[in-house]
Image (cartoon, rainbow, N blue to C red; front, top):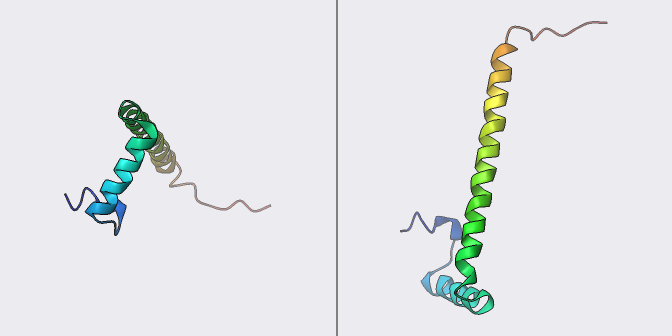
Length: 73
């Protein structure tokens, strides 16, 4: 569980509980799963986009390895 909460940093259990309770009061129990679902979709789309860019760079670099000469004018 320590690795799961590593992104939180130096927050302890009481601080996390306090933040959760504040979110519950602000958004309500029905709205929090919708927010989490939207956040998950956004993270998934970002990850897919970064993988696409990474793949296109790798494919583009593999074809241009032999043509690294500079053109002189």
